[in-house]
Image (cartoon, rainbow, N blue to C red; front, side, top):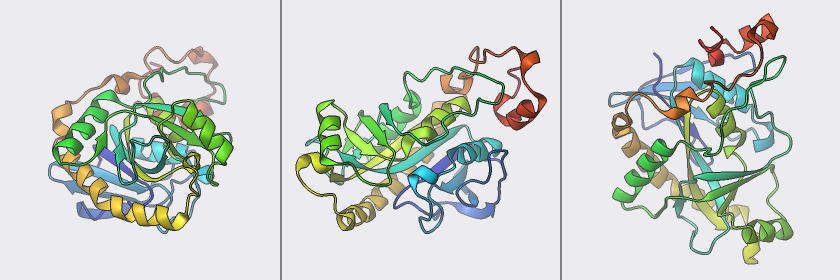
Length: 285
C-alpha cells in the first residue's frame, strides 16, 4: 500500500494509534535505514505512513537522526505531504507553554547534519525562501483554530544542534534577534523534503520558555508539557487528515527540482543516478 501523507512523530507522538488497518514495513534506502519501522495505515480515505522520528522508545538524539533515510523512505512509499510534530521552547512571552505554533520560517544553527541529497557528482540548488509548504501550513492552522486550540499561525523556528539546551547567552541572542521558537529537529528534514519534492509543515508544541526568560529548562517540566500537548497534536493531525483532499493533487513543492539541477547529465556518475533514482524521477530525461 502506497501512502499519500507522512506523519513524522516527534517528542510525545510516538505511535500510529489514530490509524486503521495498520501494518509495519521495513524500508531500506541508499542512505541507510530510517529511524524505525514505518507504520502504514488508513485514516478515512487517506493512506498514511507514520514514522517515529527518534525511534520507538526515543533512542536517537537529534544530531544522530538519519534524516536522509527518513525522508527518502517516505518518498519511496509515495508520500507527497509530510506533517511533522516537534516540541519547542518559546522565545516570546505571547507564545506560552502549551501553545501551538505553525512556523513559516526557519533559521539554521545546526552544524553536524547532512542536509542535502545532492553530492557525489551532482549539484542542485532548490528554492528554500519559504521552507514550509504554504498550503499545508494554512490547512493545519485553520483546522487547529476551528478546533479551538491556541494556534500561532506564523513564527520563526531557530533549529539548534543539541542535544543540550541553549546557554543563557545563546537564548538571549536568539530572543533579541526576533526568533519565536527554538527546537532541534525541523532541519534538515525541511531541506530534504523540499529536495524530495514533498510538501512539509511542522506542528510545533511549546513546552517551556527557554532560558532567556531567566528560568532553567527543567526536563521534568518539558516532559510533562509534552504529554499535555499530545492530545491536542493528535486531534489537529486527525482533523487535518479529514480535510486533506481540499488541497488538491498538486503544489509548487512538488516541482522543486524543476530547473534546479545544474550538472550536465552526461557528467553524473551512474552510481549517483542509481542512488538518487527515487528523487530524480524524470528530471534528467
